[in-house]
Amino acid sequence: MQHQIHPNKIRQVLFLLFIGFLGLLLAYEMYYFLNAFLGAITLYVILRSANFYLIIKKKWKRWASALLLIISSIVLLVIPFAWLTSVIIDKISPYLQNPDIFKTYFESLHQYILTNYKIELFSDANYQKANSMLVSFVQNAVGGTMNGIGTIFFMYLILYFMLTQCMEMELSFNKSLPFNQKNTNNIIAELKSMIYSNAIGIPLVAIIQGFVGFIGYWIFGVQEFILMGVFTAISSVIPIVGTMVVYVPLMLIQFSQGNFYQAIGVGLWGLIVVGSMDNVARLFLQKKLADVHPLITLFGAFIGLNMFGFLGIIFGPLIISIFLLLVRIYIDEFGLSKEDKIKSEL
Image (cartoon, rainbow, N blue to C red):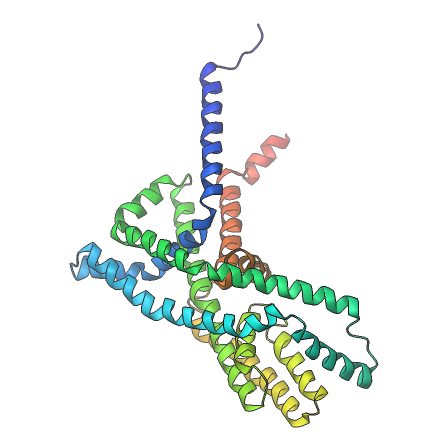
């Protein structure tokens, strides 16, 4: 008798397909809220201890604790970030409206290197290609950031419900994970560590390096020293070269303009002071920083900038780290053990 599939199995598969279809449809339509959802999760992890302290130890009402923490985070995080974003956009807008402004700097640098080192650094074709890629990348980053008002509103709306329903949410999260208790605990611990690393460690190290760079550029007469300080902060996430991608071209531009001492000052300041700030900051933050591979930080930052704007520097590496964590947990949970592999080969 030919083997037949039980009708219950068919109904189960069809039901799962229908759920998957609705899930994909909802995910596609709610993509706009992804940034807000990630931001709410990040803030919840950071504010979780304070929220439980106020609710359990101080006997505060949940809504009062949530409102206090939300207002505090707006004052300490959102307002400074909004100000910094407005400064960046104000400085970058003229270059986006007239990309040929870059050409002056490129040509000055190109002539200096060609004259002194006989190296053809930029051809017209290479310049046009690099300029087009740079402008497109900056426009995507700025465009993603400009959607920030709606994102912030929904982020805090989600965060409010997460803070007021914290105990029920965490209990439900623990029960819904399809893993054993060991892997469930590992996921929670590593998620917390990665969020701290990406939400606190990366931005704080970047801010320190950008601020130190800004001081040096101002001292040594670099034009647009505020903007260059911001670029220094952003470039700090790039492995190996890091902030060199900013201060080395600035040094060469100063040389090309005949500012010998300023060029030496920019180079030494970048190499010694800005470069050492990375190690100093990480030394103080090492207990909070997860061991994130540099390539995850690099690719995550670029992917995140295109998806979410400047906030993508935080969320991009976080998404990649979570994906790799889930893959590792899946292999540990459902993969064959060494004994099972040996038995299957016999």
